[in-house]
Length: 262
Image (cartoon, rainbow, N blue to C red):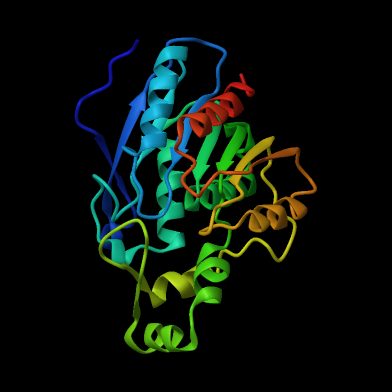
């Protein structure tokens, strides 16, 4: 088992006026022939979550490389959460993948991280870097979440508050305090919508989706795969699964999906 530093490493990302320190942890591979993994966390989650920690233990056991990081405004990274946008977090994903990974990578994204994995794949393909993509495993992918899962669910009063004040205090079951959703996040998200056209993963994809997920309903995953006609994709529906999919049986399915690419 390869040891990794106790403290995360830092990659500076962005232009001088927008630069922020992005914390990451990299587990070097101990075996050859396995794709590296890049973990993309969900909205307001981080690289120390239950799934990320389980993935790290699994990779350590298999001798597989793993790269995980925190978006700006999340976890150990710098920056304010309120400054976060899809563009900003996507820039960080691409910077980490390009600077800290070598060879084909398996992108493993949870919720917003699944959406960012697809956006990153599109950007890598546009720059001729599809060789970096070994495959992807998406857990309850929150594709177009700012529009389809936030704006579309907001009441007229909530929309008015967001547009007038620039911030919407959105209640959540995952924290005592509401999430501060900014107008910039919603408006920037409209630059990155995927579901109006064919969605390309540019590699084989596995999707895990709980049917009791109220944050990203399973029908959202069905809509996604209807748009993914150009690439091989397998959808696994977990009848009693919620959004987090962090139970032992859920984690076992995740590791099985990851191992299917080796």
